[in-house]
Length: 398
Ligand SMILES: Cc1cc2nc3c(=O)[nH]c(=O)nc-3n(C[C@H](O)[C@H](O)[C@H](O)COP(=O)(O)OP(=O)(O)OC[C@H]3O[C@@H](n4cnc5c(N)ncnc54)[C@H](O)[C@@H]3O)c2cc1C
Image 1 (cartoon, rainbow, N blue to C red):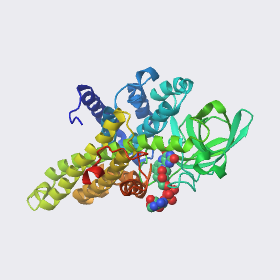
Image 2: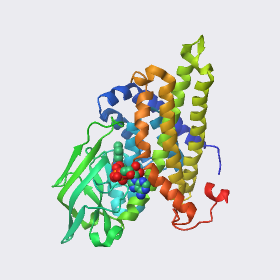
Image 3: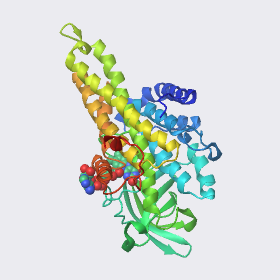
Image 4: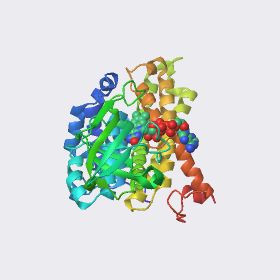
């Protein structure tokens, strides 16, 4: 693995940092306080083409690699997790899934507009009774001529109320278990489709999270992504990319905590010296820095495998688990370093602390990641589909 970034990767990181500082930072606190999805910021992101970072130029993307995409995601989340959610959903869960599973026609019709923001996508897997147990889909797809009629409910769907297109997972036959699940591309303007925003969230307050309701929504068979019965595979492959962007975003959040805490620690004086000179404060900063560096290497390893089109479910899962935990520890420590001021949104660290929690809930909880990793180590189920013999951190131990 090459540890150096290319000039192109460094340039996109710098560009994203400058954009984030200029366009997102000044509005992040008020957007969070007002629970406002900021369309002005979103439109500027669309204009820059950021949402198409790893999508090939042929389909309207920037054609950059996963390292560049990870660095970009990190930079957004260094200042705002809500804004990063737009990237994770639009790019990782929706565009890259269509890129992998779509027909040429679907790709040409959807990807350029997803990359430029003309279309907004959402990923509708979770249901009231199907979160971790994602195969327990209750949403039904009933064949009606050349169409399917979709009925059911999805919940906790990021960008659900603002989406123009939803990837909806539904079963064509509950008796088939996960083999009956099928992925449909649903136009959210369709009759029978409604979305309702979820209010009162702990974090990600400036991002849209919604429930979706489908009442006999008619979807033509041409809108099936993959084949009938491929839906579970489609959903899991999407999570390989979604979890990657969550991991990179989590590292960004840790970096945001480091940047805010180190500055504050050298300004705030107690007992006649900056708090940064007290060993217990230094210990919290050292933990954040070590976690940040380790987390970055983990998500970059996953990026390296993705760039080679090598199956990376295990490596992505490890990165997601570690980085999500690191972000929670960093948010906790950053608030501690700020003392009473950390308890107010005058400083960004209380938002970082709240926003960190979802990183070990969505796209597979912390426990589900541990299950994937442990089952692989135990040989119960290999996360990458088979024992690859590829050197992983786990294999090195042996
Ligand atoms: C802000 C937000 C945005 C989201 N965005 C999306 C989205 O865009 N699209 C989408 O489809 N979903 C989305 N989700 C849903 C998210 O993926 C689920 O909430 C998550 O997968 C957990 O499912 P659940 O809430 O049903 O919890 P449950 O599955 O009920 O889990 C509850 C607890 O039990 C534990 N648990 C469950 N099963 C096991 C097990 N086998 N072993 C050990 N522990 C277990 C879990 O780890 C958790 O701690 C979002 C959620 C949030 C909060």
